[in-house]
Image 1 (cartoon, helix red, strand yellow):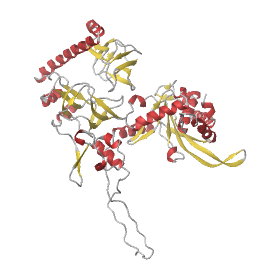
Image 2 (tube, rainbow, N blue to C red):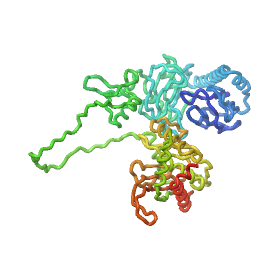
Image 3 (spheres, rainbow, N blue to C red):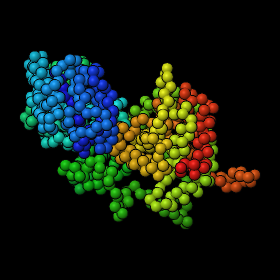
Image 4 (tube, rainbow, N blue to C red):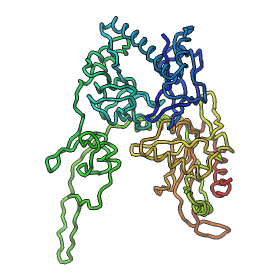
Length: 550
């Protein structure tokens, strides 16, 4: 039975999408989980995967073309299957598209229900939808529910945000594509589960959820025995909101989500001073992020008062200090585990070597002052380093490569990764085609991406595709350090602080400003001489900023 795939709604504000690239062609075999196409939304370009298997029989929207949400995108079915009625029905009008989709969906559901009924004696009622943990990035294997924005018993409309889900790259909002009542929550706040684990059930009020979940694990959609055992351990349906409470001095209770409580603890925020915007005054994540302490906040009881007296001499105690030993184990986030895995693989598999140079920054400092004196212009030293790296990579393509075992991939484009520290670790937003951008454009792009990363609003597409990475710890006063290569890159540059020190110029000792740059190279693709030549070119551009203004 052919399956109609329409243009998906990939963001909460998306009304239409553009097919940036098809990764499959008509006639190709499709497996569940295969990436069909890259779709450009109003926010980002995202990979769109197939949730069905079969042969790609028809492509309804060509590369570069845009179409509203729910327009016929593709048809998957059996090879040689007659799909003319679906194509005709899908191109007449938007209403015909919708009815055609509903017809196919109904037939598919009917077929699945017949199969389920044959094996279990039960068919999932019409209008009931079982929602699984989604795959929100290309490398995501499991997700953690950071917070639920809906509770069991709430009405859900198509497009409503159900939950915030933490992937290996970011925390993302997950919206519902269905309308109905939220009947069941399968993964509680703070809990992790593999992709495709039952996340929630939406449907009409009064639905027998236990029967639906039993059918889900026992019918034609049966999982493997290990997954089935996990689904058998489902949590009973409850209309209560999972809350963490805390007693306060006036006898009231503070209702707060686990994620908000964790963030508040990390930031040292007293929950008694925070106003909640959630249901029943519940404190949620955004309340903590937007909290600003009042100027008249009273000092805490832990404030230390000291008194001195010149007329009294305190006896010296000979007793040794005593204290309690203690440890605390904190669950690693998906981001932290992903960082550990990626950097471990890079360090242990790629033979690193390091090259360091010291760069004269006097001209760079003077040039930056002149550039920033222009209206609406703000350029940092890091922006200048990024531009210099991009120009140097153009002259040394061997550094702009990736190791692929039997081959080395030479990247003809230059996408600069910029390491950004966030609360839970490190992310690397990517400035695309950095060599084609001016200094102010690079500065604006970095500021925008870094802001999104720190606010957990960055999309996976904005953190993919780097060919070279820059990590800067100069703002923390670090003079020199080495970094682990961000694979599949072949190199990463570590940028230290700018310091004033005695230097020799024209045979005289004068005060100068210098900065140390350390290049980590993958010796499989970059040899020592190639790395050294790259640094020489980089030094020239940084020490002569006028060359980067052309």
